[in-house]
Length: 108
Image (cartoon, rainbow, N blue to C red; front, side, top):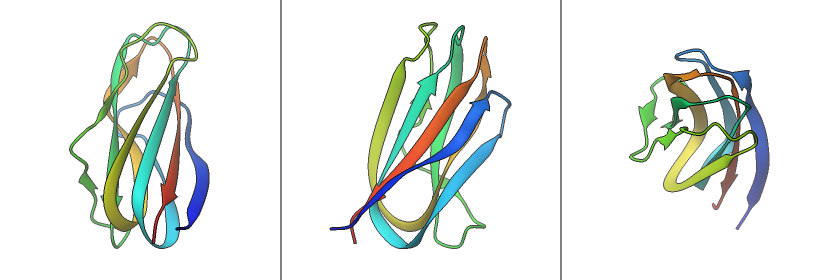
């Protein structure tokens, strides 16, 4: 099984529909989205989306809901979805602060 290291896809982000992603080179089976909330964050949603062509995106069933005001709080979700591309997209604006997000991938 190959493990691809996390890629920092969003940095100090809060605006609706801000997105950042990774290209695995070939399809990877598992994708993990890590979201870290900055100081003051009180609400927002970051959705892990996947694509086979880097054009047509679909959300995975479990979005990451950020509802914390504690700086440095992290949330992670892993899904089994064999695709080449994955991205994090802010699907509900982050309020009160910003978030950072990373995506890791593994599997053949």
